[in-house]
Amino acid sequence: MIKNNQLSITNTLPLPIEIIERRIYFIRGQKVMLSADLAELYEVPVKVLNQAVKRNFNRFPVDFMFQINSNEFYKLKSQFVTSSWGGIRRALPYAFTEHGVAMLSAVLKSDRAVKMSILIVRAFIRLREILASNKDIAQKVKDLQHQQFRQGKKIDVIYAIVDKLIQTPTPPKKSIGFRTT
Image 1 (cartoon, rainbow, N blue to C red):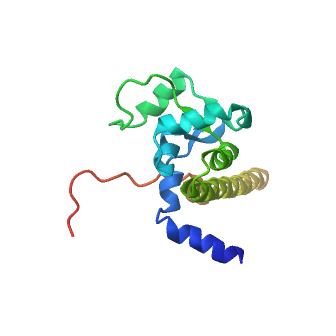
Image 2: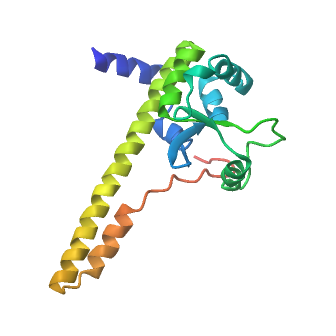
Image 3: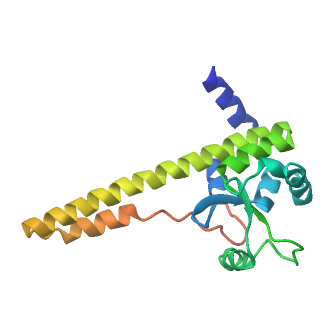
């Protein structure tokens, strides 16, 4: 029964989870999504999302949501060559953790908000699993290095290969120009 529900949610929103994952940032040591990105995914204006949050502010403690500071905003904005965040902002965006995203679906109450929140939480879970997997691999490499040091063996080539595997894959860059088929 749960599988059918999952399939219907995925089928009604033809949005690959990778698109959501690209909108998850690490700020203050937490995985978060910005209010502008969430508003776009929920198909509501940012102003409407922010108003809903302000009306229900008691539902969003600091471990669910926080407003980023100007330094954090500048660092995020500088990661993109051409910013789609253009224009002058009146206020700095809010950053929502996985729990904050789940709470947003209750506050916005639209069918799309509920479905998108489910997909977004799945993206957070998938990133958590990837990070945990990388930590396991890193620990195994550390153990191998320690073992090599004790035994005096040289297996630098293996370390180089494993180090490449451990590195977090970077999402493919968007192509510029027209697509030809």
